[in-house]
Amino acid sequence: MSRMTKQEKSWVFYDWANSAYSILITTAVFPLYFKAAAKEAGLVGATSTAYWGYANSFATLLISICAPVLGSIADFRGFKKRFFTFFFALGVIFTFLLAVVPNSQWMILLICYMVTVIGFGGTNIFYDAFLVDVTTEERMNKISSRGFAMGYIGSTIPFIMGIALIILAQQSILPLSVTVASQVAFAITALWWGLFTIPMLKNVNQVYYKERVPNPVSNGFKQLFITFKKIKLYRPLFLFLIAYFFYIDGVNTIITMSTAYGSDLGIDSTNLLIILFATQVVAAPFAILYGKLADRFKGKTMLLVGIFVYIIICTYAYFLKTVLDFWILAMLVASSQGGIQALSRSYFARLVPKESANEFFGFYSIFYKFAAILGPFLVGFTAQMTGNTNSGVFSLIVLFIIGAIILMRVPESNQVTQSNSITH
Image (cartoon, rainbow, N blue to C red; front, side):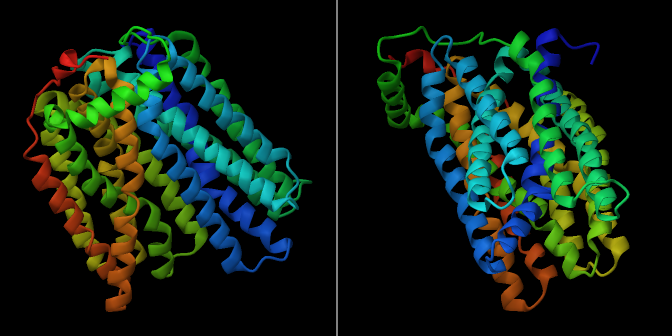
């Protein structure tokens, strides 16, 4: 950290800040809290699960559709920081509201959660795009990897605090109910997210931009239309996005399905939480390692290495039988999970025209969000047809192979300079 500039450190710390939301709100605590609140209100499990699915799908779809339009507007001078701040405030405020809304009001809780998803997703569009502003092309792999590493480390601290509170409340060691302990965990998440974002708000500013024009909103739509018309000029960039769509779908599916997969093997919830925690810890140094190796062997080479590791993971999963096997699988995932995501971000950042970074990271966000559709369906369909969960995970190998084949067709180093020819 000492060798990074103030801007780089501040940018990296946002990964540390928002990671608390990722693990406590979207993954570990709030889903169970909502299910319990809905059950207490008289909703059957299938109904509350359906509402949970609808809420996630609608919020994700909304921010994904808006991403390129918001990005094209944010490319004008002064807008990127404003949009980042708006979505950040939206996310933090409504995360805090999860802690104060009574759990009897399950519908209000669900609406608040939807707004946090929009705030979190919207902020990440502009956060990722700020990578071109805070560092040089030569350091993008390193800085992006450090961000993911800090995110993994940062996620463990509020995670331990929140889970400890809930466990102690369950065992009546603390004079708190599980409901209150969960609400305290949500408040910790909001405070963690807000506090560690201050350096980003204070020290990071938009360096690359287009000069403001009258009616920036309508001009943002116009610019988006021009980009689509001249999509052939950005062939390397969109070719990478297609490759990214396939292999990141495999990565995300393994992340999101891991708990269900472990349960099918008979691993209890306590052990699953321990494995999840260990995976976060191990992933941090490997993310940094990927960044260093990418500077030596090039980013695309290390992305292909990461894809190859995931092909091994899918193959090993087919023969999985014991808890030890699951631990080995989890550590293999930890070895490449952060690296492949970090290098994807930095590789894409080096391809985009810097003054249009927000618009193109809007597309990046769309491909990332919609990549959560094919993989889970493939796993579910294969598992149902074969009657074997292991076969379902093995089927993901197709996504990684397709992603690797397309990625190999993307030029190793190609800066998209055609944006200079586009009139606004």
